[in-house]
Length: 239
Ligand code: 5GP
Image 1 (cartoon, rainbow, N blue to C red):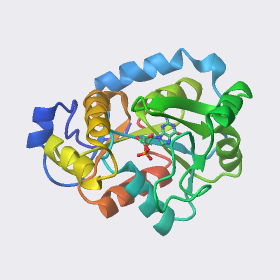
Image 2 (image 1 turned 135 degrees about the vertical axis):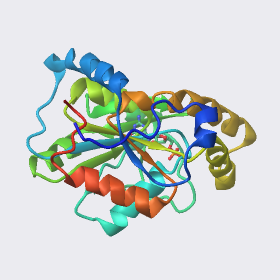
Image 3 (image 1 turned 180 degrees about the vertical axis):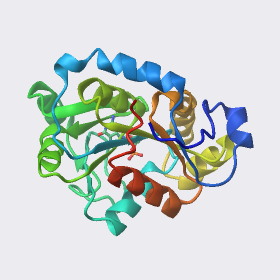
């Protein structure tokens, strides 16, 4: 297991308030071992991903997962980032096939029925999101590092089928900052925002299930740290 200092083991709102406003990496704690033990039990249904590393990035809503992923896409094109399918409507500037595969409910149903999704979830009680399985397996078979940027429910599903993947939690520097980012984005209605904050509270409590935490104080630094983890074969977070 990677020997770095643990900055925060459990992110409650108050702990977040007092956490340092700097990007930092921390390994998981004892609870993470427990989570891994749980994953071991699902080995029967696991999939061999060859030598390449699959990294799963999750974290609370509006923490900046998408922005960090976009920064990696731009600066580190050798790292393949999965394009999720979603039933959500495209926002202005979002491009089908680049940001998401924007599909109908019927098409999403079909993808589930045909077992085309590695994982899927209803996010914010609003829309369905899922990771097309085959492109992930293809990239890993090619030996290319692959990154999934998904929600907590999805990350838990991937841990069941691909426990050898590396699970990274992106944390906000503080709860206030998380709220500020969510409001600042201005793309959600007040009701939607309320729902997302509710989800975020639950999501923050899941940090201990992950192998590593990266605090997203600076997008560039967080992206650099994530790329370092993706590239390092020795940092697995698994004992
Ligand atoms: P947004 O609608 O803001 O683009 O994304 C909402 C949430 O959906 C984000 O937390 C994002 O991580 C999550 N998400 C995006 N793609 C997937 C996916 O393929 N599977 C799952 N489970 N969550 C996803």
